[in-house]
Image 1 (cartoon, rainbow, N blue to C red):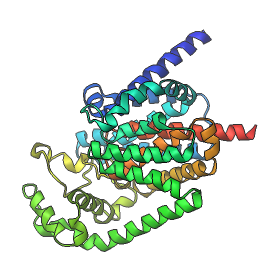
Image 2 (image 1 turned 120 degrees about the horizontal axis):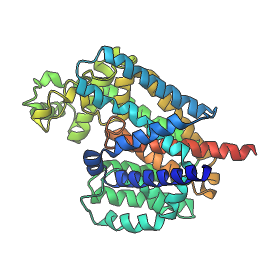
Image 3 (image 1 turned 90 degrees about the vertical axis):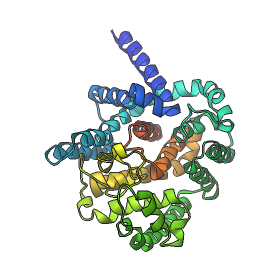
Image 4 (image 1 turned 90 degrees about the horizontal axis):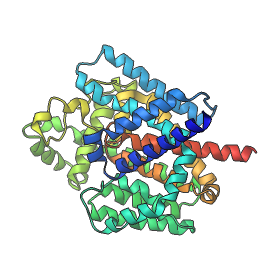
Length: 390
């Protein structure tokens, strides 16, 4: 009986990894046609329900608190929602979190299988870093770069990943990959945790000061915004400040962020929940979808969007989790390199950076990627702690 259960579990893990790889490589196709995000979320839920013992660790406690807070919002929102379709679309934030348990519970089997097919993935992906094809996603494929490109020399690792990300950014027209490339270069420059975190704090302070300065210029309503003249309004707004003229897409992001952070205050402190409108002014590509866009349109920064839906408690918990992961990575990097698990951290950092500039946690196209790699990362840290305790 035990051997039968083990065989079933091995098959389950292999199917999960096959689905995950397809989802990473071509998420638009496999999500829109086969609902792979929902399949992975269901697998994660079943894994969670079958878990008999929960380890006591701070990272796990923070995640369970985040899961509980999101579940609470999902329940409370049932009494305040005004759009059922919007509620169900927003619910992706909650149910996708269960893919965490796939990465966490099947950590060893997953890493063993992925490392065994490294060469196959290398041959499948690397040629198309230079020659674009339609089936490769311009963001999520980068999550596999650390797995397939890692080498023994850690400095070369980051340099190679930076170069690959930069090439991929030009091949597939993705500015986000330029940021990822700069991230790998910053790890080379700022070698310890204190130096790196100081650098991040400096960047954050520069952004916050700049954003506060730009707030008066980000009110698009003063330019007679309507759904029909949204493009004209954003161009008029861009003329209001030289920084806003640099890039139209970035300016739209700032307009969206300002609505969630400033315009929704103080309701955003505890979150607006699911099935309620979050945005009033936004770019429009399809006029038929206008009635749904206030409910489902992402803010092109998943953490800001999460703040709007779930409030400060969610953001604080996410921040604590990510800070602990970053600190552990820098403090025990040599151990992770020796155990061939460094790539897990790097992949999680990549999806986190993608989340800073794109809809991920609120979108079924990418949501499970974040939570799966978070689960892998948390289990990697716990495995290191267990070994150190022996």
